[in-house]
Amino acid sequence: MRNTLLILGCFVAATALTSAYSVKKDCGKHDSRNRLIANIIKVIQQKETALFQYFYRKHASKSISVTGVLEFIAKTLHALYKPHDAARTLKTLGLDNIEQAIEITRFIVDEIEKCSNVHQKYEVYADRSNRFRNSYKNNLADVCRGETKYIDYNNDREVDYYINKWFSSPENQDGRVRNRCFKRNGIVFSASFNLIASFDNNVDNTLRNTHVNYRFKNGAVSRMPALSGIFEVLYFEDKKINAQFIQISINKGDGHVIYGLPQNRKDLPLVIEKLSNETQRNILIKSMKRMNVEITSIIGAAFMKNGMEQYFISQGITLNGYTNVLQGSTANVNAIVQNINITLQEVKPQSPYPSSHLQGRNKCRTKFIINSAVVYKIALTKYNIPYGFGLYDFAKHGEFN
Image (tube, rainbow, N blue to C red; front, top):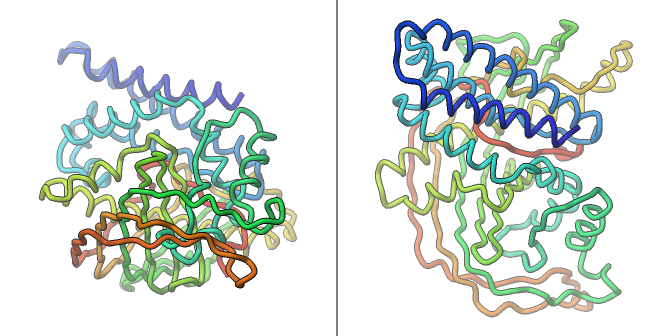
């Protein structure tokens, strides 16, 4: 069922794109194409909902956002076929013109079609998020990543076996310290930004805060506690094993979320590698804005999952999963960000040395030489986008203390 839903959703999106690019402009066919695209968007949204509900029922301890890409596709198609709405839709998406929307949409569809079991890859990183987080919580660049390779998983048993093996603490493996720290060449992409987020159903637009409304189907509206501080994002691309990781920390350690991206995701890395180009650099800035809002939404969902679930249960409300914060809800995200610092570092590892648990150290550390670093400081104004750009995982409750 899982594969069927995902493949069907991707097929619908791909079919829509094929139609969008192959049909010639013809006034006589304009109305029929509009009806067609409206139906396609409706089907995509239905599949998004079905996928989200399926994942939540199977893995109640975590939430997987599967709507970002398909939502982007649907909105782009909407802009393509409804010119009078195009400017507004493109502004919401953070794009300058239809050509950018077409290019990004084509890329997204290609990425989805390359891997029909993309949902399995995301489940892997979410399933053991707490152990994975503890392995990397100090600093991605300081932790032995020799074991963090990735394979395609065929079943839950295989997932459990390999995740437990790879991400368990070193001293627990055969009673010995792992010394399998490999040399790695990679790129570390880090960013930090100040964010004030107020998850409150009483939205006051005069306040320079981030407000997020979450409304359940039964009409109940939750109040979210306020959150403020410095968010730090660390992105690492390991070229040798073709793996990518994103670590997000709040107030330098108060909370961590690990985003695990599968092997062939090339949205951010492609931009990072082209930072010398001003146009590509601007695209990266836009991506950071989107990432900020995505983080805000996910944090709100985590607060809801942790703090509100028991309340609703006590009120006799059965939750099939809290509102999908990226689509199909009344989520309204207005992110205020100041002083985004983007740093790109090319990393060259020296010979690693294994640590010994007899000396009170339980992980391998690798020394790095920073070859180059570029820092950009951008002053940003309010950026409003109610859904995410891309597929991201977050999960187990307890991530935020």
